[in-house]
Image (cartoon, rainbow, N blue to C red; front, side, top):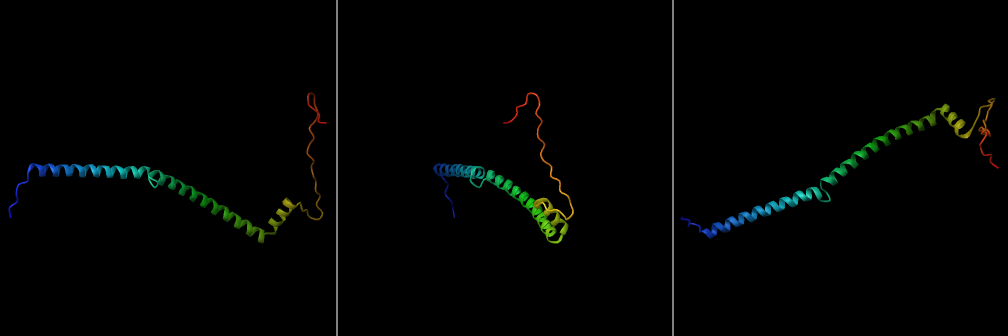
Length: 119
């Protein structure tokens, strides 16, 4: 089978199609790069979500520590009579039989020269 030679117009058409193909590929590439950086799910959003993840993980660790402390305090309240007595004394003002309670009144500021005396 013999191929016929292509003319100049065929070569020009092929060259234009190739140039248009390159131009379209560059435009699509630019759109992809722009969407990669500026889209709703682009790089800035990824970084923000990553920072939020790290912050949430820190909060989870802190809450686990706090939870363990609270479990320890609950166990002390259940099984440690000394802790119950300590709380009763601090919060409820309980005293043992035979103990003497002293209440200290706040000190009254002294009236000196140049001070104003309330009426």
